[in-house]
Image 1 (cartoon, rainbow over the protein chains, first blue to last red):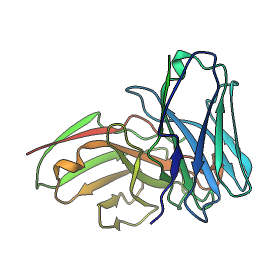
Image 2 (tube, rainbow over the protein chains, first blue to last red):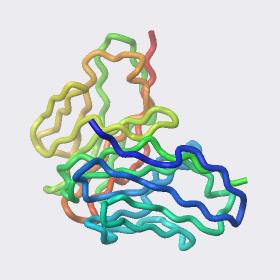
Image 3 (cartoon, rainbow over the protein chains, first blue to last red):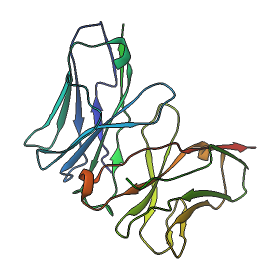
Length: 114
Length: 112
């Protein structure tokens, strides 16, 4: 079965540069979530989208922005990168927001800021 | 927000059952109990979820207390591949965008 696809899998950027991560949800899933996981930490919720509209916002820095497109894929844009942005970024998708639905995660995108 | 409490770590022997506890005393009537696990450098993997009744799937069983203030994830025969961090998460129905809030999970180690 098709899973959540994230690209790129690995990314190295310099400080103050910009990075874009892409997420392709499971077919027919209309909800996308973004998480950030620093070394030795638990995943932290950043932002989510339902039917191309932002549905919730977590601890996402102002330097980051995201959107969900008409084909339901999503992109996370990160500008003015800082060393502390180095982390594993997960995208997840689900069918709707109902608590009884399952959320499926991608394998993540490794961002290293040097 | 309703929170969960889990032991920091647990150990198990291979081929033996494992019972991973989770307390959620402030759970509301519409909160679903979800369990995910995460291996190092991999995305969280869905294990099981339930609302009121016990649930079984090919990976595990979920036993939910009658008052719903606690639950237990049961791995019937632990394998080395089950070594991971297990997260017990309450997912609200339609509130807060339906997101999962990861707290401190239980790191399960499996000894051969």
